[in-house]
Amino acid sequence: METISENISTFLSFTGFANATSGHLIMILIGLVFLYLGIAKKWEPMLLVPIGFGILVGNIPFQPGFQIGIYEDGSVLGYLYLGVVKGFYPPLIFLGIGAMTDFSALISNPKMVLIGAAAQFGIFGAYITATALGFNASEAGAIGIIGGADGPTAIFLSSKLAPDLMGAIAVSAYSYMALVPVIQPPIMKLLTTKKERLIRMKPPRQVSQTEKIIFPIVGLLLTTFLVPSGLPLLGMLFFGNLLKESGVTRRLANTASNSLMDIVTILLGLTVGASTQATTFLTPKSVLIFCIGALSFVIATFSGVLFVKFFNLFLKEGNKINPLIGNAGVSAVPDAARVSQDVGLHYDKGNYLLMHAMGPNVSGVIGSAVAAGLLLGFLG
Image (cartoon, rainbow, N blue to C red; front, side):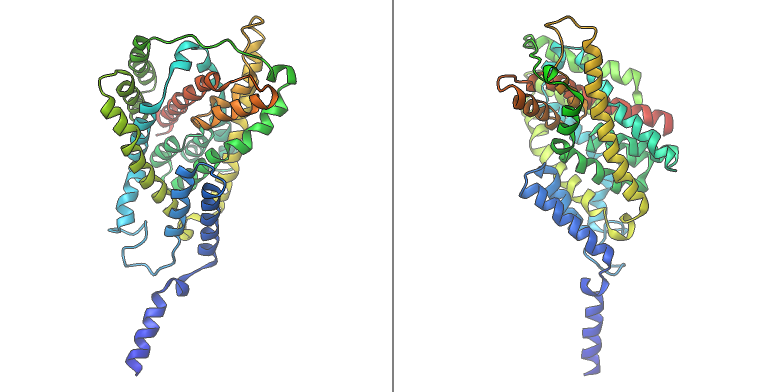
């Protein structure tokens, strides 16, 4: 009987109930919130559902030594997490983004790239804030990229500059990307007048197929000659776009934008969520990163909208830009552009801003990758 009781006691000591801590329970609750927002509220479900479930997976309590946890050598989750740690999931995501992105709005109105550039002030504002709060230069650079509203870029840069903070940075970046429809509209309304919100922009000109083919080639050469350290992201982004626009590689473009993108998103979301293991994730630094991440989004939205208002001072009547598209300079494609559209339609039911907003939105993708390359070049 003693042997049976000892076996039962040993079994119970290995269960999650015996090894659970308050930290595990807190993180499981956070994971459930992510799942609720993704499923019930439909806020970025493609991101929040895998990440939310990953948080649950990563916070099942266990005793070390069974090669179960994501940070244990030889565990299956650990091998899957290598795509995040080594930074090869983000370029594959960028390949898919390029293969499903239409750069026509940017090609037809190149000055929209300035709005995308202005919104990157969120990155450098967050960098300065993180430095002031005691993070070292590399950590501050990795945290700052949250302001670009680009989860894959945040993972790529943090894997190079601050691997120990990668879980907090990745979850923060994806969380605020999902909250773009909540964070941005109040700021956009605060910074604009009713007259500015009613500005109607000229329809974008028709872009030829030749221009669409030339754009990724020229874009690659210009951006990577300027910032070679951004090549893994920018190279894959423009390659994916060329697959789409060339007209002769549709099957490859479809694979990159559908099957491959879905597979990598599943693996990336699940492992990023699982990396929030309470024993390594729940720290004061993680809380600070979440606060700085929120600030960076606010700064990015402020700078994008205010830049358009400033730019309009130099444009003739009839050529002015609606400041409501300034928020779209962040890299959250196409959610930020949809926010521009929704807020615009609230004030004028016939003012469709989506195509105009896609210009700064896609330039924000390029801008965040360039900014990551600059930070990596200076701090790496």
